[in-house]
Amino acid sequence: MAGIELKPCPFCGSINLELTSTSNGCKVIHCADCGATMIGAYMERAVKKWNRRVYDD
Ligand SMILES: [Zn+2]
Image 1 (cartoon, rainbow, N blue to C red):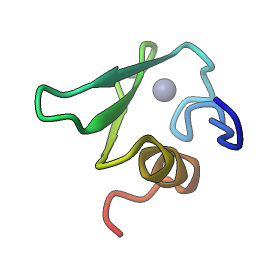
Image 2 (cartoon, rainbow, N blue to C red):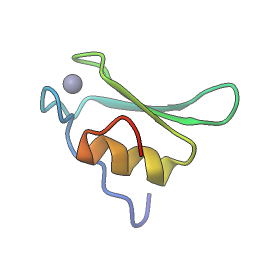
Image 3 (spheres, rainbow, N blue to C red):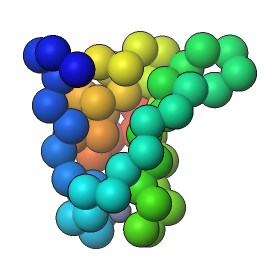
């Protein structure tokens, strides 16, 4: 995805990450190793939150 860098899991360092969407269109990043999830209204926002390890913005 151009312009968006998804860093390794901020909790366990895994790169075994899954990108999915919720039924209402929110984007979800999920770590398959430790189960961490981050949800954002847009993928770019979800990625930024993931990379910064924050849950609210
Ligand atoms: Zn993880």
